[in-house]
Amino acid sequence: MTTGKADAETSQSGSHSQVSGRRVAALMMMAEENISLSKDPESSGTSTPETPTLKDLEELLNTGRPSCNHVDEVWPNLFLGDHVIAHNTFGLWKMGISHVLNAAHGNIYCKGSHGFYGATIEYYGVPAHDHPAFDISPFFYPAAEFIHKALATPGAKLLVHCAVGISRSSSLVLAYLMIYHHLSLAEAIQTVKKHRWIFPNRGFLKQLRSLDIQLGEKTQQKNDI
Image (tube, rainbow, N blue to C red; front, side, top):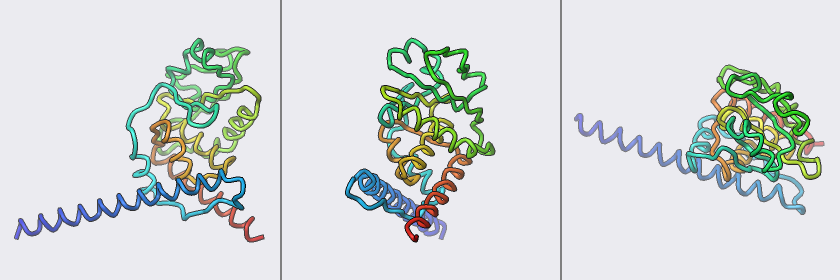
């Protein structure tokens, strides 16, 4: 009886794993198709699939390579990195970085500030804490605007960073892609993950999911007019 029960539980677990894997694969395929559609100049608009569950998003984030460099270019002239590259002013100069967005402003590990970089780099600080209870959503739009204006500057290159370049900074980059490039959260994750492994904490991911829903509703309202 015990063996039969164990076999049944193992079978059920394997079944759940297969279903979960298929769901994530389908989510990745949808994201890829919608990214391609959004870049098609002849397209009348992007597809708006139902916002994935938090669990699906976490499984999507868990796919791909589990490591990253001190800095990676995740969008044209937009670099995502950690405090190591952020503190390397000579390295930033060699990269041609003209703007820095520090998502861990005031953190003891991230000493970036207007005074630290001087007049050579335009600086913007977001005093976020990498904790699920921290509300980073009030910074989504201001940070996205800073990124948008920086990338609209001829010859500009922007570094967005936090302590490790995985949670806080990636959340702001994802929000930017959603707000200004009309990508869904799943599409934005797929776009960034092609170049760097990221993993916003669960609280940030919930807030990004809420943003995804809000933006989707606005798009739907415009389409209904």
